[in-house]
Length: 135
Image (tube, rainbow, N blue to C red; front, side):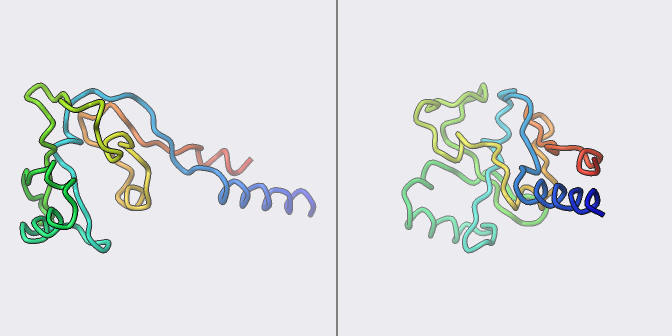
């Protein structure tokens, strides 16, 4: 009985207080993260040029980006204007916090399947194997 109770306590302690995922690898400098940026307004993805224009009027930092394309769901994908033809950042030292944090693990990343770009050297992997929680 006590052993079982301790197992439950250990299980819930780790479930609550440990990271679920970790980042492995390093940047391959493919530039995909700089060409496929998404922005959100009120927890909804930006899907129109009009929304993007309003964003630029609201905050000048959005002038640093341009519309690259739309994905299959109609969400606008943006490209950083600092990316050169060799996928190098021309403003690396002054890059935004958004760039410095990539890939950061957020709830939306977790719900999206914890995937990075195919060419990305970073991988988001579970911090612990399921079997480790059963011990």
